[in-house]
Length: 195
Image 1 (cartoon, rainbow, N blue to C red):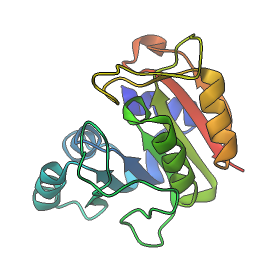
Image 2: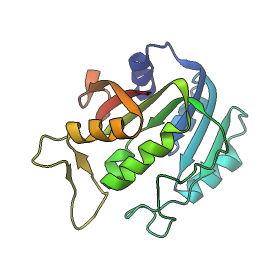
Image 3: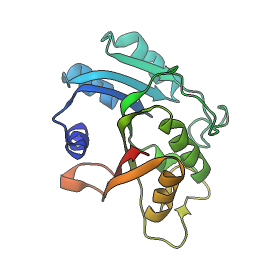
Image 4: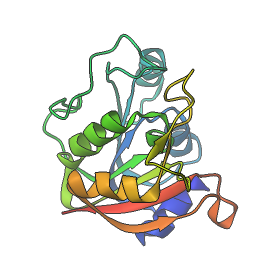
């Protein structure tokens, strides 16, 4: 359902000819590709969960799929990782992608880390590529809100602030849709193009 919704927003029938980078991949996308025979050109998943990436690398034999562990810091999920900077490099070499997607990643980022991440991902998208991601957009005083006792557990942003981050990091927002469109279980979602 989520992948079909993303394809609908992209204006394509499926991902059969698409080279996808799934940042913060988890295992749901890989499960859909392998077990539900979801069409995919190539799929690259990156996550900070080393055990999960090792499991996927050992157990997924489909050569269109590759998985990479990235040991970067997140206050909640990987506090001992390397600091995330705008110069950090993804563990995929010099590759670039038709589509970069992030589901429930920005919802777990501090503002500086969100900006660095968007800047990093910009270097890995093809000129005609797209970025699709979810975020928790709230009407609020200020740009960002967090649960002080658990930073990055549930990061909320104003739409204007995230749009500014996108502009500063080389992206243009093509569309922004609200939460749970058509009953799809997703936060607010952005479709972006590189500029």
